[in-house]
Image (cartoon, rainbow, N blue to C red):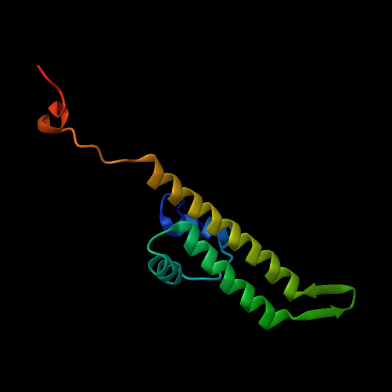
Length: 121
């Protein structure tokens, strides 16, 4: 399976590692589910990815818990913690980007009247 990195769905898949592989391994979420997360997060790719990672973390805890059998160890809580930390980092990046956008732009009135205000000829 391939995914399109020029779309928001593809970018969310990249950030969540829900990409499938070239040998048709299925993704965890369908495109409609990824789009639903994008809709819930106002179209913000990083926030949608963060929300998905939080859902994955919850599922990890529900399904794995702590398993120790036949030299195989799995700790769902530790995996979930790592997923939540990644989700938090994505939210912080989204916040930082949003802060940068609002502080980098200012609306300036360039009308003739505004440009001649206070000027004496």
